[in-house]
Image (cartoon, rainbow, N blue to C red; front, side, top):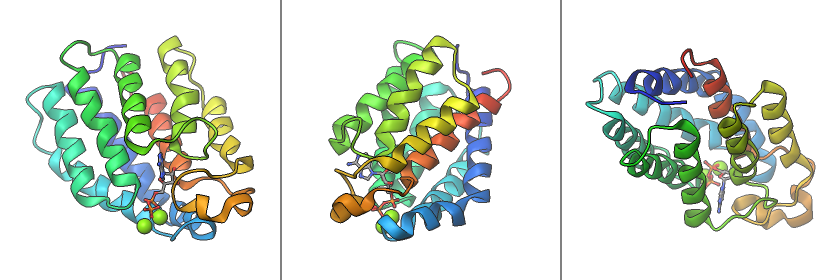
Length: 193
Ligand code: ADP
Ligand code: MG
Ligand code: MG
């Protein structure tokens, strides 16, 4: 599936809406196993992204770069540089492809490189790792997104703030997995993708 400036913009606007609507929920998820700011961090970031995208990007690469820079400069915490890296890697990858699955694959590799988390460490990497192949195969569904987010609950955190809790991180959904779940949900709901 080829991404365009218009579908990228629709995708981001949809994602910003989900983040806005669920900011409190995301921060509530971050309260027992973190510092309770994930939703507010992401809301600040996606508000900035939406503002920047009001000026239509000249091309896909420029669009991804704009999003990455807005996230890096406003989100903060662990998730800001990680989401920022994801979008920067997609920007780079547009030199060789506009295929959504390929772009998301590059983003996942970037997140793994930047944060050093592996699948099973109870981070957003788990959701990306589970869902990028589904996008590539054209088999992404809401059920698979829900299952990927829910799977973080039983994991013991090995990276990020939640890892300070060790075993006690078990039984809580990882906030970054949930926000990444919304990003994939927005893909499903964006017309033309
Ligand atoms: P902070 O923990 O600095 O307050 P946020 O609350 O915004 O940052 O983001 C927390 C989320 O970031 C976690 O739920 C997790 O999914 C993700 N995360 C944290 N560390 C890593 C890492 N090393 N690799 C991948 N994702 C990570
Ligand atoms: Mg936090
Ligand atoms: Mg924080």
